[in-house]
Length: 127
Image (cartoon, rainbow, N blue to C red; front, side, top):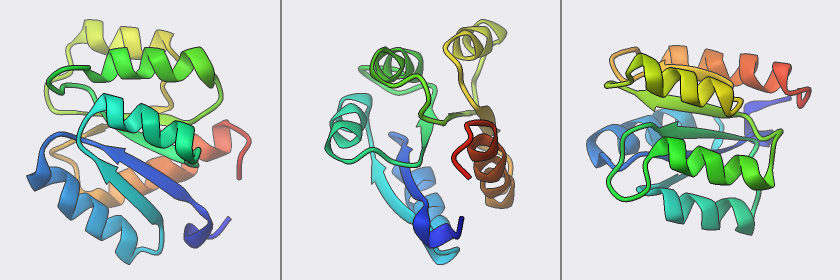
């Protein structure tokens, strides 16, 4: 599957992180939609199912775990990668129990994020 065929939903409340990552992924050829909260992410998934979701773990309002719980209530197979800079072991365990496809730390470079796309989609039998 070519990058142009992959639709990414990027969910992060920090513009200073989301916008550069969105720009970088688009430059690599991916279709990217960026949103800043869990409710908007859920609405976007309903509107058009993405190929993969990057979901910030810590956001005001509905956090990443709650958003992932609501995603899983409707779609068990959608690959979701949690974005974190503050993830606790309990957060990680909760995300793993909900079927998260991987974790991306905000202090890693975006190349690592792109590698996770391939892994997550391969393990969900989409590629």
